[in-house]
Length: 384
Image (cartoon, rainbow, N blue to C red; front, side, top):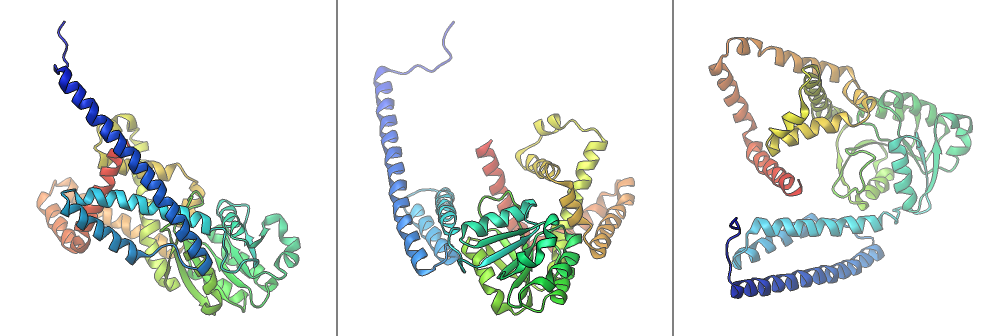
């Protein structure tokens, strides 16, 4: 039976082998250069640690990327390809730097009390602050009889308990804290917890919402929202600590935070829950659905699966956190039901009219969304 492989001469085979060896040698040099680059990064890190400089410099990174794109185009290389490579290199550099700087505290030796320290997020905070040189204390359910001892000399108290419990815990904790202690919480709703903390503690108060979970291995470019309460200058070192770990710290008033988080978190989680529940009720064959899904649809299925791989209690706390959020979800369902007549009549004209209205409203973001989602799909293809 004749071979399906194309024929190739001995001379061509030898030439191909020489070219492959040349490519292997270049790859070896690239690895050596990356190692040399990392050694220089280590020197930069030591300098930053000595002078208290931050890891992330957005302007420098963007200037560097722009320069690499320009050079790439000049020598005939694809600029997007070069940008992907250098963004990955820069991210690795940031991650390694923040991992080492995590051991440095803005106020080393200060005492930090985590209320709810046995929970997942509480343990996460204990680890990060502990590695940064803070003296750590944990107060959980069984520790309240020792609250006076645990609060003695505390510089920072962080409440990390379920949303519904946070105001009551703040009221219970506040009277035991030193006057100069910073009181903070890490819930995803800010108005009620912030009001409770302000009422319970006369000292510095700040609300925090880390927009990431306790499984996060690095804070590089993770977002932390800070809602001012009282004495912001006394709370600044805490925000600086998160920034030093690589996080992006945004400031927002509690009411504004809760309004936007209703959309960003509660509504999105609830819509994903409804989609997943519908698939369950229909007993959809997920294996077949995934087999016939293009990468973008597989990514959407992945986000549904990600939700249902986590703690239902966490999501019920977020989704039903306030009457305002529940009212928002009802509006969402009312909007969905308003389209029933369109479906019953197969009214394509009505659908297209509303589609164009929404498309015009979305227009400032649509091109960016298309670009970003295309990037994610390409990365998904590369990985799997």
